[in-house]
Image (tube, rainbow, N blue to C red; front, side, top):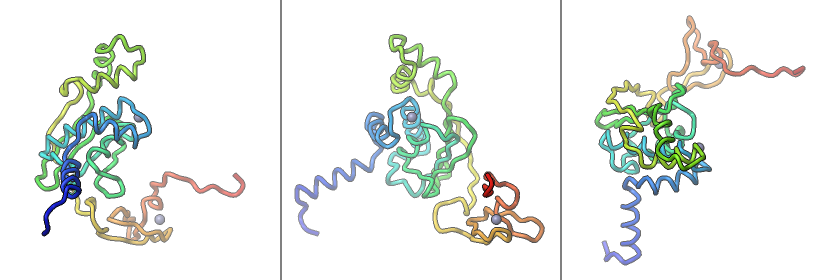
Length: 216
Ligand SMILES: [Zn+2]
Ligand SMILES: [Zn+2]
């Protein structure tokens, strides 16, 4: 290995810094860009993820990418920020969306099995409004309050255990079968068995769409 030049030292240092958890302010800039607007949900999501990660012993979400899994319980603003901070993504199977309609998320350290569920407290909204009475816009008041509110006022946190199946984890698909009715391929055990037939969930009666007929 040769002598490290100034440019190399700078590149190494910035890479090391990038690999650490950022500050709330730094994440807020990035969240505003990737989410498309700044909103209370971004601050809530950022803080929720930072708290969750720290609680499972992860200081460096970039380095811990492969041993981190996040479950989100709502498809609203906060989820984008949670994905940004954790680096967990739907397409990597490291982000799991459960449609429970709650501003809550569970963070799992795959290496240690440690997991915590963090939920935004319902009374945080009212508390936030009371903190900045001079700000007439409720959403703006909430945004500013969420930046500075005590963690315990904002969130409830509990240690949990999450049973993970191999077929739910990142990596190559564990299985692939063909639906006996529609002929479409189904990955990772998401098929249904009806008698001796292997069916996709749609053909097994769980279809969320209806085909449009030509006279409609
Ligand atoms: Zn938003
Ligand atoms: Zn099918």
